[in-house]
Length: 281
Image (cartoon, rainbow, N blue to C red; front, side, top):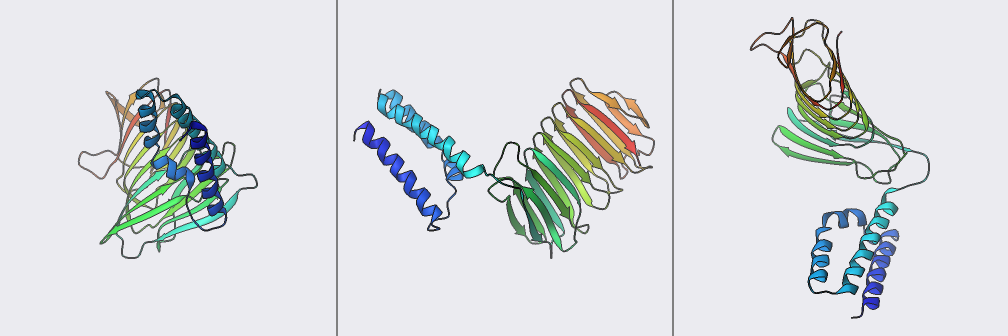
């Protein structure tokens, strides 16, 4: 087959898939299909270079441009933000792991309806709903929440509510986002945060929680109960810290209520050029 015919066949195949999707015959996200199998393009590109098939290499470059176009077509929308609510029932669940991949926008965590393991109130400009997957094993559950699209300049806000009766372990990846978490009435044994240039505010409760945060150039605020036992271990780059109410021992800071072996809040901070503020409330 000649190079021109091959390119034509690729364009026809993509056009047919788009037509079938628009007619509702198939329900396939082109971007996620290509995202999962992008490595095949690399393999074919390598074969084209090894066997000096210039037209074949050119075709693969065109396919790469098509992939970018499909990403834009599948994710960018025009219009006002839309609202939706996603729920995962919590009946029979005592312990849950939550993995969240967010991106840019505003993310709120707090107490929700006790009958839901997770209730996510979403405001989004993305064309695709956030992905919410649940796996269960007896009284334990794992929830994966992932943002599936991105619109530059669009609005994205998640308000995630959790049952106060369930013990949670939370893992969150977020980029240039505002994260506000109110853990005061929740049982969160551990929370791991990884972010870019973000603003993060965490309100702790009396429940002994271990928090680890890895962040770039960010502003971070921790709020603790007045008499809470707290240990904060900080390392990284140029960190500006306001640690009123703590005594310092090396890279660690201890509140007056901290007791070895007690029900303490333990925080580990690995940060770049960031500001860290602590408040007792």
